[in-house]
Length: 436
Ligand SMILES: C[S@@+](CC[C@H](N)C(=O)[O-])C[C@H]1O[C@@H](n2cnc3c(N)ncnc32)[C@H](O)[C@@H]1O
Image (cartoon, rainbow, N blue to C red; front, top):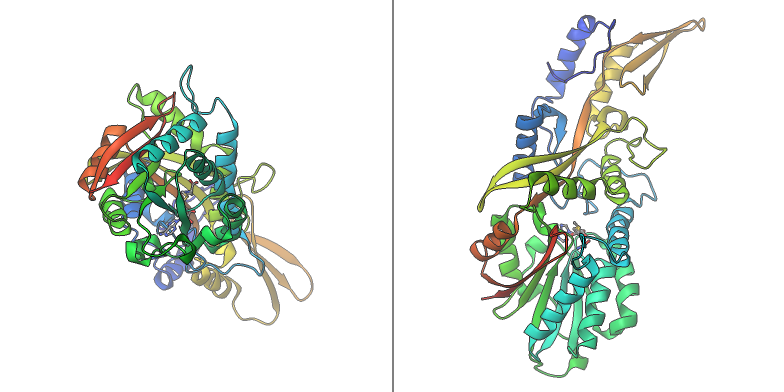
């Protein structure tokens, strides 16, 4: 069977088997569709979902980690003119951070420090560890709310900032970051690299502006916030962070972790995060690259399915839990991934007869209908087959335990953990490490 079809009682598909086989020959969808290169981590995640939840492998569209943020990331994407999905994706993350920082009880548990309190504590610790040296602040995957809060706090604590450099594969973040940070640090200290951080090294990151004076001595604080370290295997992240830093630099990373008090509690925090309206909106934006009707915004995309999976994946630090979200997308409808399929549907089912007017419809029940209408105007609908239907792996993020995360830091790169700060509910940590 090529697809796991949602066959409704009374519908018989066997008549169309021959056509489906033609489809298969031209578009070999038994091979997993990968929209980009080397998605090793996401391959492992997809395999784990297939094993655990029995989602057929060929139904899962795997994106490389950065695909959803890069302008050319989804290779077959053909965005309509004026498509602003990258800007919107950036906005979903910024909105989540904004609300987490504004809410005094966010992640606080019953009595503990809130998310905001822990973020400020991490900034205090950074100011202490800097120990009077001047600081270049490098933000991987920038976002405006946390960075402006941390930088304001560092400056208030007397840290002398040479300059800020944001590194993002998504060019849409630049203007928001400039608007957020220039009022705090001044235009002369704001820098940006639109680049893939896997392809950068410490030498590629701009040094202090000339206004900082000649041969200024400084260390770099690198931030890797927003759980983004969970988007890849530790064996890929550790060397990347090592390349981006020099001995003595400080690295701060924010992660949602697998709390060890109980599996039920751990799961509920993680599911709560992926169920957040902004995370759902973000997944919908990713799915929309494949199916224009895809959306998880209430009132839109009524038949879009969204499933949060928690699966075990073997990594360099042992088996870790990975949170992954699958969003349904009818790939044929968009003519994007299912381009061949769509073409074939037209040719197989509509033939070439000039006496037949044709259109192919897609129903909310995921059936293809072919409307055959002869020149006398009589029309009929025939069910044909369920269209190429896929699940897009919209998010995948490792949820280490705190111990696993510290192990990853110290064994997959040249770092020593200096401090770990956790929110009151223990679901989010800020880990500060020094580059050795
Ligand atoms: C999970 S989001 C986190 C955003 C932000 N750090 C936060 O705290 O909310 C990941 C961010 O990293 C950026 N990103 C992902 N892969 C990247 C890559 N290979 N190179 C540069 N930036 C990347 C994305 O554009 C996005 O802004």
